[in-house]
Amino acid sequence: MTSMTINGEAIRYKLDPETPLLFALRDASNLTGAKHGCYSGDCGTCTVIVDGRAVLSCQLTIAVAEGADVTTIEGLASDRAHPLQQAWASEQVSQCGRCDPGFIMALVALMRATPSPSPEQLSSLPNICRCGATVRMMKAIARAVAVAAPLAPTSQELAPGQDSSSRFSNGSSDEAQIPPNDS
Ligand code: FES
Ligand code: FES
Image 1: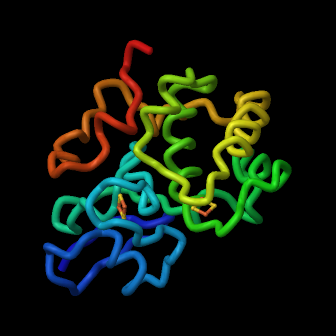
Image 2 (image 1 turned 60 degrees about the vertical axis):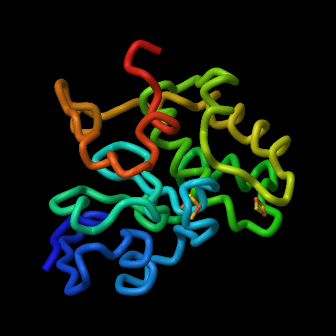
């Protein structure tokens, strides 16, 4: 039995502890926002937030996520009201839409720590868009940055001394998706 909190709800999975979090979310919890893209940590479509950090859920087992606080795109905001979601809609970013949940969750984590991320930080994200919607994404990000105040970190999300990097020692996103503390 593996326990964690997902979108504010306590969950216990009766699954093989080595099950990737992505499959637990999609197949056991019916949270299909995170997508199965490459399963090798190379596309970012599976990105969710775990203990305040963007994580490639295809690379994280539920055993490693034991006790974690997980947020998926479904739990980000009611009525898709998060500034990034609103900006995505305003700029009509989506084409096939497959990359969108992962991009948005990666950006949420990044912009909570760095409300106005640099081009270098944005380009360091592992997320890719196969449809070439990147130009519209950049416009959406700029739009969201303009209302960045609501994206500032909460004390819970960036608690002093918080270090959950040990959860991400399996090739996931701690370097690629988490901005350095001194940025
Ligand atoms: S499915 Fe591509 S990085 Fe996880
Ligand atoms: S909109 Fe299709 S992969 Fe990005």
